[in-house]
Image 1 (tube, rainbow, N blue to C red):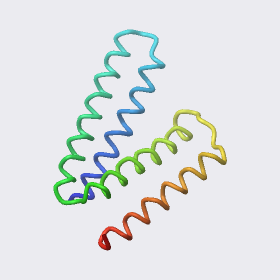
Image 2 (tube, helix red, strand yellow; image 1 turned 90 degrees about the vertical axis):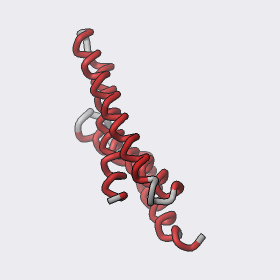
Image 3 (cartoon, rainbow, N blue to C red; image 1 turned 30 degrees about the vertical axis):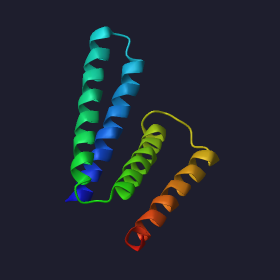
Length: 111
């Protein structure tokens, strides 16, 4: 259940970040405010889920999975949905994130 909560936390962070990107693109005040409220709500859900996951997932592991997962997902969303370009630097960075989290996960039980 805790790993599912970490996925919810990552989803909240990604949804909040995408909503904030849309706030910046809004030309009308009402739309910008609505998207800002949506972003804040998404971040709050993500933080709540992260806090719940910390009850049983070690903090160092949860933190690494949450932040690296959110970073990796938002990089993909940026390319697929927000029109950002794929660069070698982004690909290498994502590969390093995945390797780093894998190393932390594999060593979690070995102090």
